[in-house]
Amino acid sequence: MLTETDIDLKPRHIAIIMDGNNRYGKQHELGKGEGHIKGKDALDPVVEYCREVGIEVLTVFAFSSENWQRPPSEVALLMHLLSVTISEQLPRMQKYQIQLRFIGDRSQLSDDLQAQMADAEAQTAHYDAMRLVIAISYGGQWDIAHAAKQLAAQVQTGQLAVEEITKEKLGAYVQLADEPAVDMLIRTGGEYRLSNFLLWQSAYAELFFTQTLWPNFSAEELDGMLKEFSQRQRRFGKTSEQVASTTTN
Ligand code: M2E
Image (cartoon, rainbow, N blue to C red; front, side):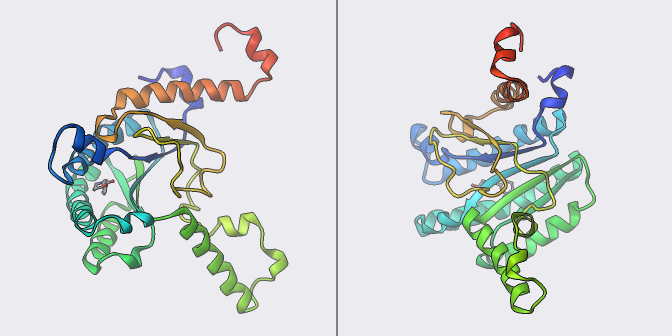
């Protein structure tokens, strides 16, 4: 686990692309979709670890805007699992005092799921040990276009001049504008892509990729990544000469 001396070098906001559920299912000869069920349970120890070490925000990619193009049976299963997971997570959120938030295009989701999400957010709104953000029907390009639309509407009504548009103004309308920027982005499952996740929010994130399929990912592996993160941050604050001149960085 993390040591005291690492404490100022840990990320405030970790984002995870939880990839590899289907490949895990195939490797273990599970039925169709059962990899996602395994994947659902892999999140719990990661959440507990993040809370334990004092991570402020953990954002996970549960369902992307591109996932709508998966086979209808898989989409249906994922929607069902999302609903089941929210119900399962609520008592855990209370136990650990974690606030649950959702980002993404909710208009694409069923009325029932939208209501369940709003209810979960309301029930956990006052918990302050950590924020767990679930990205559902989320895409980074959708997010930025959605923010641009808000500014465009202000221009249209004359509240805002075109010349006044800045990255700060646009950044105030992207999802999670009220949270610290992502400083550590992890992708499991062996692919080296961002897949349209938090594009704006991850502009300066340290990137971590692992071959581990999401259902096999663990708090131990995350702990190793946090140690690597703190070492990268130490190097970042120094010149290459300073790094070369120290034996223990
Ligand atoms: C998740 C959803 O692929 C998804 C299936 C459902 C579970 N899952 C993976 C999530 O990411 C909702 C909550 Cl509250 C927590 C995790």
